[in-house]
Length: 158
Image (cartoon, rainbow, N blue to C red; front, side, top):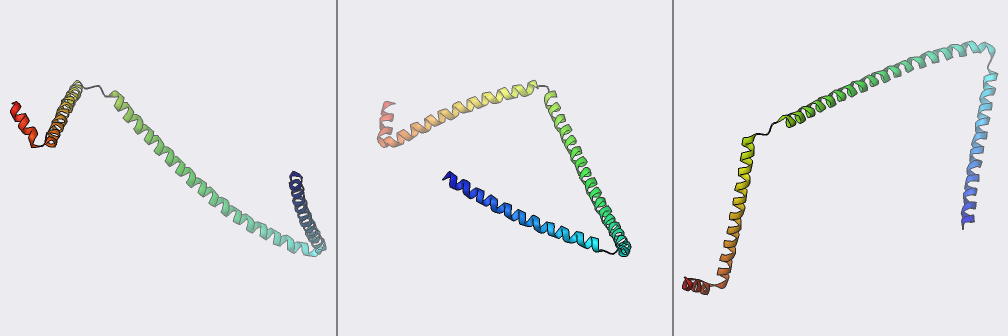
């Protein structure tokens, strides 16, 4: 099984190598054809080719300068955006630092602490009252569940 997979893989690689060789041979033929054409150009005609080449180079330089100018402008915009973001981050950091400093600078207020302690006491009292109310509700529920006989028994005991 492993040998079959190895053989199949080698076969695929061999086919790919053949395709690459064929393409390389085709490219070599095209290069030879181009070289033949260049060699066949008349020497008197080179002057015309040179001017065409110079015009093409000038046009290419013009396009290149335009692209470089666009690239420089985009780079400048990116730098401006980065600087703006850096300024915002610094501003936010300063604001956070100021808030943190104010929080640490606040001195404890004794009146505030007293009010807090009183609120805790009130909360405890409310919890006790709520517990009593729950007990009363449970007692009332039991008495209602026992029915009218429970009221007579409760009245006789008194």
